[in-house]
Image (cartoon, rainbow, N blue to C red; front, top):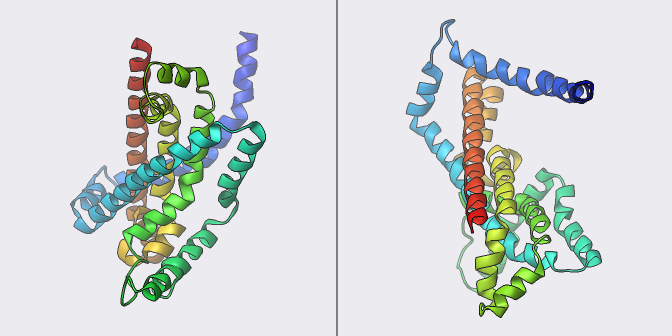
Length: 278
């Protein structure tokens, strides 16, 4: 009992910080949304759900986050496998190079993409000069630009999550599959990827949550015509002074993130049971 008491005592500072700087601020934001006129009411939430403009922004945010996750998986899985099979020195160097962009401010990285995707940017200039297009096309201030910026922003996180899992996959498992007649591609698809699912799940949680809550990248690359939930919260709170509406949007994003995390955890649990039964 004394030992457990000391353990609980060690947890107290961290729990106190969570309560003071996370739970209490969230409650102060969310609770007033249920009492807009002094009585319990779901009017603010009903207004959001029945507003086509708000729903469009909500589904755009989810769509961009899901597409970003899928692209990060496709790009990170083969690269992570390659890095995980390197020696310790080369592996450390490659991970350092892959995570180096994380040391740069997100605003700087988003601004760099504006110079690439703009009508007078590098990409349009190359396409026009090569004769593939006759005039610059609209690449900036689109959903595609937000997705490109989000992938660039969160791909290193997916990469780190996968390398940590793949480096623990034994080479003997792959040799056994090859000895049973499977080629390297089949081994990679049927063996490596399923064993890497824990890292993929963790990476998806981090990438989805990060993309859904990102502000500077959607603002600079998407503009006002392609608003997401984070930019909508800023507009409602800071520009329009409608704090109740901003709180409703924040609450819905918290619930959405919670649901997505639970779904991914459920998928991971199912996969673990399937592997255990095999």
